[in-house]
Length: 132
Image (cartoon, rainbow, N blue to C red; front, side):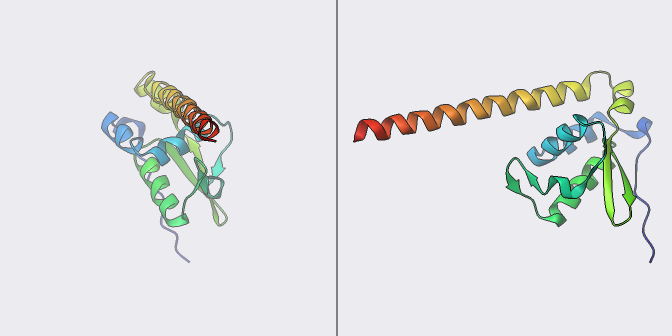
């Protein structure tokens, strides 16, 4: 069985536009933030639920392809599994602070969304209690 080699751009070919495009999708930025936060590689199955939402395997494969082709991750086949690691250090040498800023901004956004969801739920419970 022939397996096509994976495309990984050289760090010199990575562009800010490709990075921003790849991380413009909420699922991809969540996947990437998780990969950046870990020291070990992750197989794709580890991301079958992102932000508590199930992601079909075909969609997940497409997300990883976009992250890989943007130069953000390195994919390596290990048997039938694909393991992904961040290329954050390489990217940071080319664009100092870019990835860290994006990942930090993502974490701030998630915290804001969680606070808003909690406040909305609390307000709903209070309205229900007052209506009784």
